[in-house]
Image (cartoon, rainbow, N blue to C red):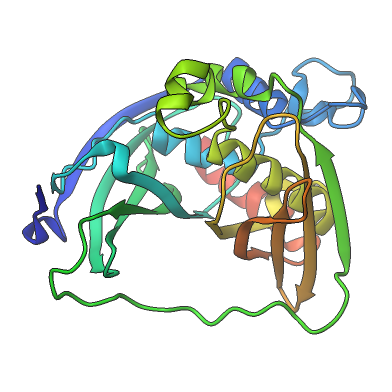
Amino acid sequence: MSLELATVGSTSGPVEVTWTSRDTLLYAVAVGAGAGDPAGELAFTTENSEGIDQQVLPVYGVLIVQNAGIPRDVGDYDPAALVHAEQSLTSARSLPVAGTALVSQTVAGIYDKGSGALVVTEAQAVDATSGELLLTARSSAFIKGEGGFGGSRGPTTAWTVPARSPDHVVSFATRPEQALLYRLCGDRNPLHSDPAFAARGGFESPILHGMCTYGITGRLLLDAACDGDPARFRSIEGRFTRPVTPGEELTVSMWRDDSAVLFTTTDSTGAVVIDKGTMTLAEAGAGRAAAIAADRRFRS
C-alpha cells in the first residue's frame, strides 16, 4: 500500500449538497442544543417560536462538506488505519437555514510524520445560485503505517495554553445515546453504534463521533464567546487527541486573546480530547452588520 504524492493539488467536485430547515434543526439537537433547558436555544432548535427567527449553528458547515461525500482519493491505504486528526472551518457568512451549495475538495498536502502520513484536504462550499463563497473547511487525516517516504513533515503552528486561569469554563454532559442521535445527521459509521464493530476496532463500546464532539465544542464556544450570535463567528480549528465515550461530560476551557479565543476540550477524566483550539470572532455588532449586508446581496 502507498500514497500517491502526485495527487497533491488535485481537485474533486463540485458536488451539489442541499439541506433543509429540518436538517439544521436536527443537527442542533444532535450536538446538545436545548438539552436540560428546552427553551434556552430556541433559535437553533425551532422554526416557529414567536418572535424568534431560526438560525444555524456555524459548525453545521462541516456537515455540508461531509455530506458531499467526496472520496479522499490519495492512493492505496487501509481505511482502518485512518483517524481524523484536525479540523478547521472558516465561514464567509452566516449559513442560511436551508439552501444548496456546490462543494469542491482539493488535496492540500501529504506530509511524512514517520509512523504515518498526514493527508490534508481543503473543501470550499459556494452558494449554488450566486456562486458566493459560504465556507472553507480544512481536514487532516493521519494514516498509520504510511510514513517514512522522505517527505516534508509539514508546517507547524505555535499554540500554548495561556499561563492563567481560563476566562470561561463550560461543561456539557453527553447522553449515552448521543451517537445514535448524531448519526442521523449523515455519518452512519457503525463504529459509533455497533458494539461488535467497535470491538473489532479495539474499543470496549461504540465511541462518539469526533465531529459530534467538535460540534458540541463549537456550540458551547458560540454561546460563551459570541453571546450565541452566529454572525460573530469567523472560524474554529482544533486537533483531536482521543475518542469520547457517549455519556461522558465534556468541558471546554476558554482563554480570550483579542479577537480570538483559545480553547481545549476535556472529558470526564480530565483528559484532553481536543487541543490546540482557536476560535476567531467579529466584534459585537460587526458580525450582524456583515450578515445583513450578505443577505441583501443574496436577495438582489
